[in-house]
Image 1 (cartoon, helix red, strand yellow):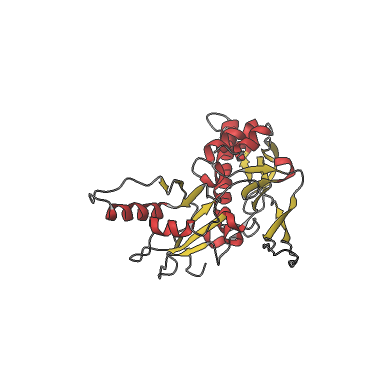
Image 2: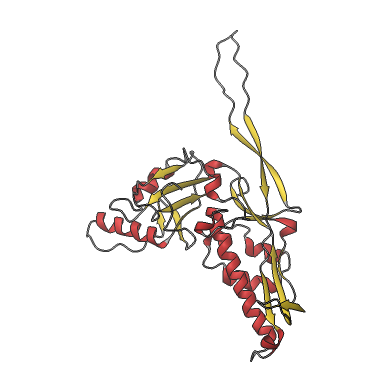
Length: 308
């Protein structure tokens, strides 16, 4: 399914200098490459969410019915400042064999990749720094999903060794990235200014920054589901049966676009298929389950607490 993504945002805004950086940096982050994205003129907006449908029923002739209405609530979607900075001693950068421009370009790639890493981790963990989130970031899927109805408990028992698998539906009314201030996403031109060493002594340096305002919208709690407490304990890993149990929680007509998992979960799923196939031969690495594509990511931790 074709979706407007972060790369499209950069291209549409004419940020040619950063487009190539994003394309390279996001290859390892399916949360960003697959996730739909939109831009907003400001920094936040409200979404109107229907949390319950009205009650309807048939009636007999000459008999009335009780009036009913849906239940609604406004949810605020906010974007947050992501602003990593490069500082380089001018004398050192000028001595770079390919020129100071090449030196700064290499560092720009570094901060772009690091930015994509933290965005991908915040996609799940939000402000939870223990799992790679950021205390000043946006809320992640863990903050938004229905932990009562849209979850399957794998039953792992060893704390700090758990992982999760997420089923996600992307779209304007579902899960999407939001980039504020008109989709602001740019690496600034290098400038020369005074910078300071660890002892607060001044020196002349090149300075460059990346500036973006990302956020995450979860338009419906029925758009995401989670398998939790996947561990290396016997019988507590990922299987197709557990994926099927999770998909049963989604409403009819709501089909997740992707199953997000880390490499350990992918290995567990493969091993479960090997044990149940007719020949007992090793199964290939899975690419789908029940026709839903699998996306492998390093952004889902294998050291989650059982209480998470």
